[in-house]
Length: 180
Image (cartoon, rainbow, N blue to C red; front, side):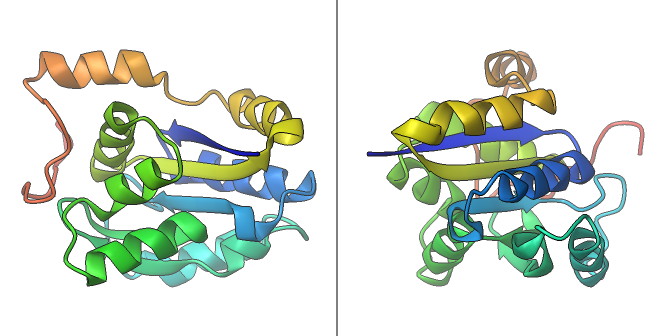
């Protein structure tokens, strides 16, 4: 059996480090995905190439990061993305499926409520890493991902709900972080 392990991080640099560590541990780039904003304080679309270059320089095992590309997701906007999750979301977006990221995550076994929080976290400038791992290696993937101190998804959902958020909206206007 294969499990999907997903974590959200508040910044791209942490997420890309997690990807590099997963690959260094022997997880195939085919099974690792990253969707996020390279720089949460600067949503300039031109950062994709720079993000890919930074990713490629993270270490010898940064194969997935070297393949970063731009993906425009309804309700989120332009993000850097790579891996199976990005490809599935891109296919859903191209097919006009609302919430392509939600559908991609839920089809991989992520709880729908959690998928909405992950998508919203990317919309608000965060990054999401997902890895498909065999049952025998899922705990190892979780340990690697958790060492980087991911967002507590339950706490984050509660924070969003206190603001009146109910679920990810692919028709939402771009999010502007308070104080920017």
